[in-house]
Image (cartoon, rainbow, N blue to C red; front, side):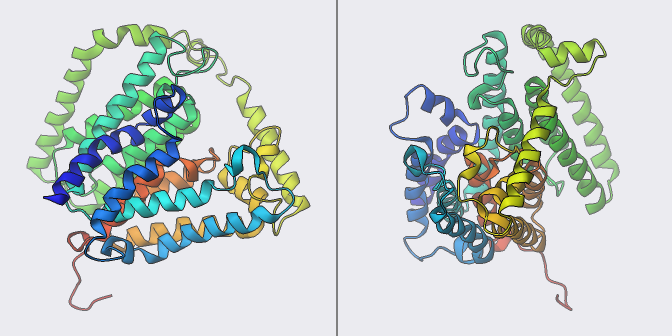
Amino acid sequence: MLNSISALVAMPLLVVFLSAADMALGRSGLLPAGATTCALAGFLPLALVQSAHQLPPPSVRRNTYPLAALCALALMALAFSALPGATWDEGGKWIFLLPYAFLTALLATAAANNRLMTKVLPVALALSLALLLWSICRDLTAPGTFTPVTERSAGFSGNANYTALVTAFLCAAALDYERTRPLLFDLVFIVLSLAIVLISLSRSGLVVLGLLLTAYAAVRITRRRLSVSEAKSAILSLMAAVALLLILLPVFAPHLSALQEQTRFRRALAGRQIDDGSAASRLAAAQDALNRINDSPIVGHGTGYARRMPELPHNLYLQQWVNNGLLGLVGYLAFLGISAASFLRRRFFPGLMLMLVAAVGSFFSHNVLDQRPFLILYGLLLGLSSAPRCQPRQSKVGS
């Protein structure tokens, strides 16, 4: 009974934080505390319920290595905050980002010890994508609702590239790589994700989502040969998806006309270069980061130092190197590698694809590790992947 209640409580929590609606609520002053604090407070009771009979819960014990890698990053951030270049502004917010990230992932992993989470998560992902699509469409038809009028439509997060990356994370976790359900469900997730990324006009988001969908198709094709019945089901699912899009076209007509007013979209329709100057700005920021790395390549300048730069590097690998030196960069690479290896060993493709999106997205974004949707999904998928029912069958020889 307690597990059922905790699973029901998890549903609204997941939808609010996975859709980035917490960011909009925070800006509106509707949260009792900061969004990160609310996330920790929300998942703490769920984690404690799963820890009541065994501490730590099995979902945490089975993921010691990936969680230890993330913990090492958090401890490193605290240790290097003693350097003179560390940024202690805003109450040490930039110092404690990685410790908060570890705590969020840890609590989500513990909460995933609830078996009902396997049923709750897909529904929460579908609702989160739908809500995120609504928010970004709302920004199109009523500019300034969630995003400044001068910026591209972004929905709840207020940043188009952030929204696109969150969408890729949600899509990675939602897709069915083992072909255990009709293709129509995956098509719904894909259509929702593509709509969000295209409306955001995020080039990096489109690259990341494109790589994800390519990997998804490759896994589905290579895992098991397509039977005649599955082929028929796939064709019917595609036809149903196209029919649904045609039916909904009048509903989205106002949003499409609003999208045509966006600068990048107009330039693309005119066959002109779509770059609005942001590419040159990002290259300059990357070069600035490299110059600062050259000044202190081993220990960096101090946790949060990148916040003092004229423009953030838009690259988490460079940001880790600027802040915490070569150790920070290697620590992040180790976190990605250990996590991906854990998911691969368990043949748990949602988690593996989540890490693929994180690894590629980190070339375009500096805030992967402080994105609550990523951290919550990472913890949940770690826990779900380590459950006995998710373990691959062992051969007689063993490996």
